[in-house]
Image 1 (cartoon, one colour):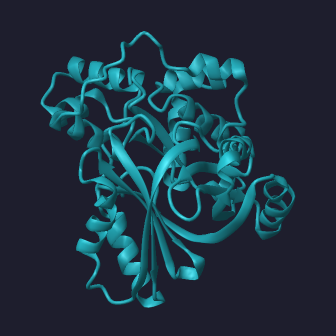
Image 2 (cartoon, helix red, strand yellow):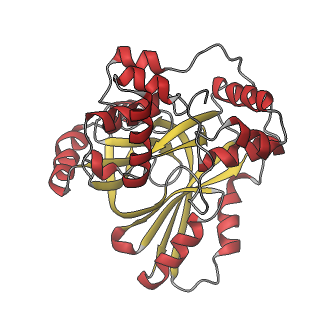
Length: 334
C-alpha cells in the first residue's frame, strides 16, 4: 500500500484528536465527510490504523516497566504471543534476531513495590523451557512518546489545521481515582478509541451522558490520551531499532531533551538499571540507521555506551490485541 497526502492527513488528524468526528476531519482536509470516513476504513484494513485509549505513563495511575526476556529461538514465538495476550502489557516486540522479547508491563500503583514486575513474570514463566535471562527496569520519565508522536505521522497538516482539530478545552479535569467502571470504560477504549458513547455506557452501566463526561474529564486531567497505531513502514520507518544508552547522570536531562527533538526517534525515556536511557528509532533502512547512530546520536556529549536491538516484529502496540470484532466506531458526535 502507498499512502497519499489524504491518507497522511487523516492519520495526522487522528493524532491531534483520536475521537474527532469525520465531519471535522473532512472539513480540515478539504474533502467530504463520506470521503474521510471511507479513507479511515481503508487505512484500518490496509495499514493497520487504529485509535486506542491509553493511560499516560507519567500522570496515569500505573508504574511502567520495560522487560527483556532472552530466550532460545524455539521458545520465543509462543512466549511472545502469551505476553501479548495479557491485559497488563503493551509494545511486545521480537528483537535481536528472534532471541529476545521486549515488552512494557503496567503495574497499578501500590501493587507491590519495585519487585512487582519480577514477581509477576517469575510466577508465570519460570517453568517455560528456553528462557535464559529476565530483566526489568522502571520507566521514570518519558521525554518522547505517549501523547507526543513520532514526527513521521505529524508532517501532513499545517499548524492552523492542527489548531482547528484540537478538542475543546471546556471539559473540567476529573482527578478521581479509577473505579471498576472506569476500568471497564478503559478496556473498551483499549480496543477502539473511537467507540461510541453507547458502547461505553453499556460497558460501564452509566448513562451515555455520564460516560461522555467521565471520558472528557479523564482526557482533561491528562490521565487518558488517544494513541494512533499504524504500520510505520508505510511512513518511512522500515528499520525499527531499540537503543539502550548509558548517559552521565549530570547530562541525562540534556541528552534526553536533545534526542526528543530528533526526527528519527519515536520514544525517549529515562529508566532505572545499568542503562538509564531508552530510545526507539524508526529509520529508512540500515544505512539510514547507521548514519543516525554515528552522525547524530554519536555526536552528543555524555553518552558513554549504547546497545542496539533491531526489531523483527511487533506483536502488540499500545492497545489491546485484536481478539474480537471492534466496537461500533463513532462518526459524528464522538
